[in-house]
Image (tube, rainbow, N blue to C red):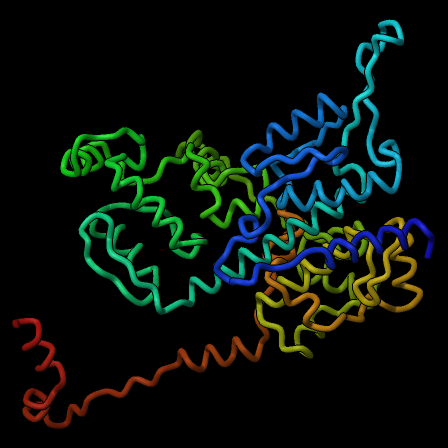
Length: 433
């Protein structure tokens, strides 16, 4: 492989080796690290809550601008990585140069440096940090979803609940009309409930965040004003919703309201103009599109020797395993990496040439590489192929057999005996009681 590709591979490996999960599965790995943030160029340090001061310092003193800071999953690791890299090579090797006052005399001009994900090394670093955080959050969420040792009192009526956290959330929704969304979408549940309880104890409305003189006045206010929900504009809640770790740059409020905005402007009269467009599914390896799944699967089998149907059958893949496999291959192709041997290339053309020559398209790596939680989420949000996947025929047949429950009729030869012994008599007695 070319030297540049090897360098990118070393960068990726280095990033993965530098990352680590928290020792406690219930901890947020962004919070367990040292809270001091170093400047990339000098010996200055700032506390984590002073991140804006650090960014301002690097702009004023060192002329460095970091693009899309809010999309960086772990800011400390990000700047620590680049602090080391800037000691190894000149900043111009990594950053675009922005010259201010370009029309002014040269002594009045200033050069600023932009660090962004247009640089492949920066993009790989950001993706690595995001994937690590997503993996950690999903593991924490799964732990909480399956936890049966949950124990907590309702913040509205003080009734105690034990078992699974969903019992408490469902109670608050049904009995007190307090809805935070699906319990399965919540992560760091105890911290979330602690935050809500603290606000309630300080007599603060959870929605408008006004403070009241006593608890009864607060409860009346939340009931009359329909304020039994959290404030969507308060970013303090962002870290408790998994959606914020999946779509960077969007708050959970924006994601939740997208569908509502789309539907809000429409009315029933307009539905008469509905025109259903044919499906357009893309090949995993080239730009070919097909209007049916069968045609697309035939194309991949005939042109690329990739038989998804055979792979599904041979490996016994269920629906979500197929989803993860497709998303994994999409991601590998997008990163110009062979999913069969993990070799990386400069371009997609070089990659496909290699895979066709060495017949690597039909070769899958070990299941542990692609059967991972992050591949539940689409590499491309409009991937129509994901919508057409299905379970194997054997599973569907087994399901059909389970649904064919035999119905045995009662003996009608003796109506008098039937009236006395029929199970329907018990149902009638139960309904009267």
